[in-house]
Length: 409
Image 1 (tube, helix red, strand yellow):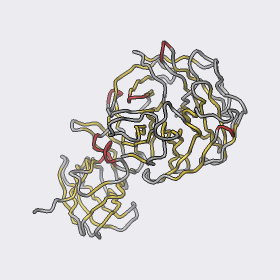
Image 2: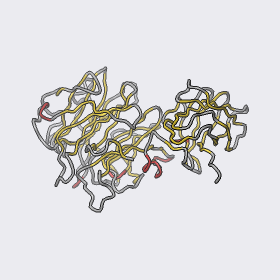
Image 3: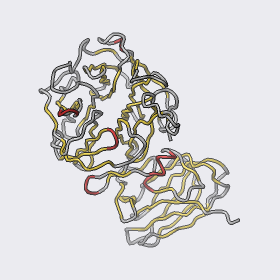
Image 4: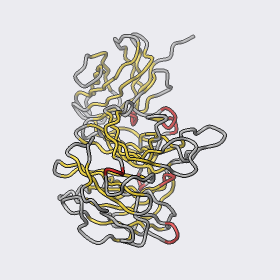
């Protein structure tokens, strides 16, 4: 499902600041352009990933660039209470702006490029700023493209976030790909580098070398994709043509999609074909199943674990919760069927609450079997859309998902 339709939202980079999702984007001018025409950069924010609010527009004439129509990809980072927005001018250079608020306003921090044209042997654009999870939360900037024998480059940033702590170093990807739009994320100590078409490479060192795995998802196009984590859930967001499905696709007017992303053993990543169509953050009681790994929020300690059938949720202990908002078309007093199993010797209670871990109790269930079992429980709910929060009491459990009993004809 697409978000923010018909506004040319593309090259999405999402960061979580102060408990809210902020999406830093480029801006395709409109349909029917002969090439990429991008007049500014925009910031949107959301607390549910469904409804997005325009926070700020950074115009090139408010930076050292002056007026231009080649406002290429942007990224952002926070440091010491300041927010930094990194922007590129076509394939020429990268600048940086600073603000006291993630939603702006931003001002040019240097009055000149941070990464000027010709600094290194690659086109200087499409920045990604990665904050490592080491003791110093070391910041890095990566940029460039790998076409015609070129490479990405990476450099450590200083504490001020507007200067380089070292000369940029080339990044090796084996076998190499021809692309730009680099992005880095980290999971379980492994660095993931990705680019267009959902191509992924991994390394145990942020500088590389990176080993190419494969494309982890397929679509008509997967344009400039990035990862983010929100409420312990991992997402992948990417661009597609706004008029995807028409006979003649317009590649220069794009929109954005978001899907859940699941890390597999061995460095691969999986996404759900079903969610590619329906989108994240909402559900329907008529679906054949709502998989456990599609949660919108989970308490600390809960994690997705690969199994023979896909993924399951583990690390569920006393007080753990899982939240699934916006479940549409729930009948009054629904019959809910949980699929779960206990890990502990004792049974595990499940409270089904309205809207949050502290909401009204709509029903209760007990997990008594170690093997996955369908557990039926009757809810006391009104007709319509509800957010269901599963709160686990006593013992430990694994969770596979849930569904609603179908009405017999």
